[in-house]
Amino acid sequence: MKDFIMSLLFNLFKLNPKMKVATKKTISLETFKILEEYKCKSDDPTDRGSIIDLGGGGEGIIGQIMGRDVTAVDLHEQELKGTPEGSYKVVADARDLPFEADSFYCATAFYFLMYLNPEDYRKVFEEAHRVLKASGRFIIWDVTIPKTENPRKRLFVVPLKVELPFGVVNTAYGTGWENKELNAQLLIQIAIETGFILEQNQGNNETIQLIFIKK
Image (tube, rainbow, N blue to C red; front, side, top):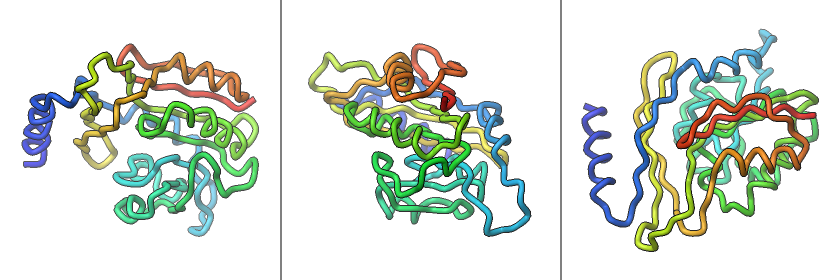
């Protein structure tokens, strides 16, 4: 039933002249395996949060996969309230994180950067670099958003099918398109300028999947 509803919504999106709907993407469970390196090694249930998930509210995909290993950060408290239980939740701005330097082994951004203004990308990378431990990784999943040449199309929407250990999530993320541009090369340039090294680029023309290491 849920797949039917998502299919119906997808078709409604496509019929809306003010929207650009990207091709539906499938995110396989395999792409999350690198996070297993950052599982908590302690049996103490209060020892948690070695992965900071930026924009981790809402469906909280990273938190659903890694549970107590995740500190989910979101600017909007309501988004965190709707996130499944398991992760540690903090209301905070990814551009000004309330954590000490060298606090986390890994940072993630799962379809989060698409919601930011392009002028904020650099600040998010600077903060991710600051709170990561030496050789920590910053892992990004997102969608390529080209500059719009059609002023009537005001929203950019990407439907997703996400494979999780216990099932599949069908969802869609949408953002304002005006003055918005997002692509892997732009993020790689910012990352290098803020002290990261590119480890992997597994995306394509439509999707962004990057792994950076803190120098």
